[in-house]
Amino acid sequence: MRILVVDDEVELAEAVARGLRREGYAVDLAHGGEEALAKAELTPYDLVCLDLTMPGIDGLEVCRQLRTNPPQEGDSPRILMLTARDSIDERIEGLDYGADDYLVKPFAFGELTARVRSLLRREAGRSTSVLVVGDIELDDVKKRAHRGDRKLDLTAKEFALLRYFMAHVDEVLSQEHLLEHVWDEHADPFTNTVRVTVGTLRRKLSDDDEEQAIETVIGSGYRLLPFDDGDRD
Image 1: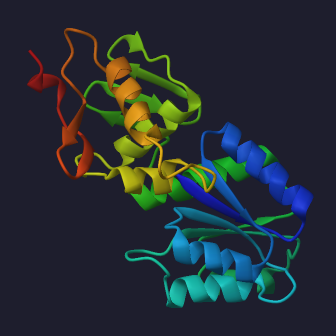
Image 2: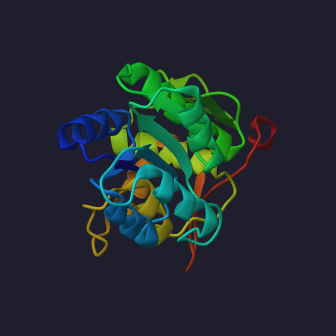
């Protein structure tokens, strides 16, 4: 999942980004409203962690523009307001402008990650942090994945890629789409990093006696198959 952290407090923004990256998310940074809108114009973010009080274009205006004029096709990103303003009226104002949730500074990082998971589950139409597709199970809180009784030994990027596939089961996802949602802005679009990571994930998902979980759709991308346990021999 791709997240944009927007805050003019550089140290705080970088600390939040580091923590979210440790959770396996691809994270970009913006230190003002103008920069945030410019990046959102280029990248289809899944979630924006947005500071309310910034010089120039503030968080409310960024939120309003993302909601009224989404820069990408489809739905606008989920928006989590991060702000020192804690009055009820100010919270109501943020939510009325289109924010999905509101977290008052200072906050515990554990609460931030829980709210991020909750918003991303809502985006995918889920009610739990455990994703299940056939005999593949992924626990986003404990950072564990299994296929049947077998624990999957995944790198952080493989885990993030599997999480994205499982949130979009049976959808054909192009390499460009995966690069936009699972990697951050520092990824080189001219490398074969997506193909290589999909290949290693595919091998780890399937032992010799297990059905292939990820198929290549020639000319289009990759798809996690929506098989059931009963479909296997």
